[in-house]
Length: 140
Image 1 (tube, rainbow, N blue to C red):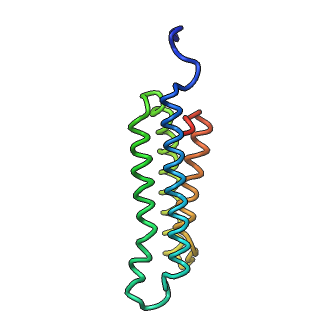
Image 2: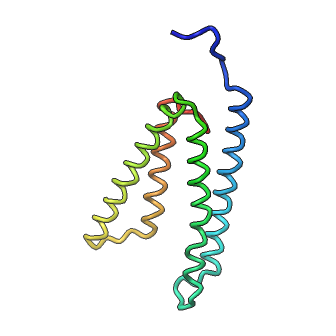
Image 3: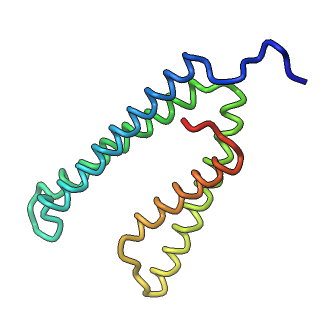
């Protein structure tokens, strides 16, 4: 039973939080992409430079930012939004773990998959997004 006092749409405060989340997450993704371009361009990945480690760790800074942004957004959500959000997280995590185990099994059998870590990440993110669409989770 719903109350006549319940609003039909998002409040201005909630819309502002969604916009702020989108800006922050896009900034994090953009920095991650730039850090990866820098890594592959100047990282000397196949060389012997001691700076390789610094370049290799550079993309982790935007990833840490993205984790903080998602955590803060989840803490801002009301109980119903959180209830809609977490099935997507659970399914995305499960798909990513099953994909990682599959990649590990293939690697153990001698079938190295180049870029397997990217495959694990992308499958987990896609599963998260598809589940969010199915359960009607909030956009951000």
